[in-house]
Amino acid sequence: MNLADIILATIMSALLYSVVHELIHYVTALMLGYNARLYIASDGILPSPAVEIKNEPQGVNKAIILYSPYIFNLIVLVTVNTVPLRLIALLTLPNILLEERRSILRTTIVAIGISMLILFIGKNGIGMSY
Image 1 (cartoon, rainbow, N blue to C red):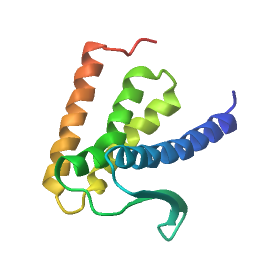
Image 2 (image 1 turned 180 degrees about the horizontal axis):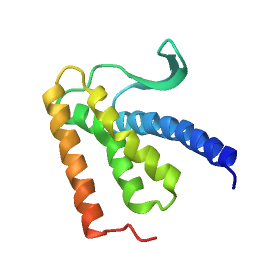
Image 3 (image 1 turned 90 degrees about the horizontal axis):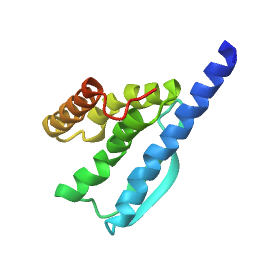
Image 4 (image 1 turned 60 degrees about the vertical axis):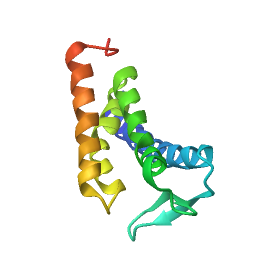
């Protein structure tokens, strides 16, 4: 596998990850009984998948919908052995800070908790066999 193949595989994996990330938000919202819509949005630079949830979730339901993709990140970091996917999961973890703009303290606490869990799992070698 040459460098171009590695770069292409990483780009394709990142695109797939962004779709899976939003699908997790979408499916979680539907499972909790919310009316959700998956669509292609634009941040002014590139089109990207996005989820719109009608009747704004509150409390625990909101936290579950917002943070469920990061549990997926944790599962990928612990179970997947391919370096590009693990890097994508690791490098997208800081996005958790962008999920909830109204309560940066709550989001930071969740981010620190997930990071500490990942460090604990990595240190103890749980599920990270090669």
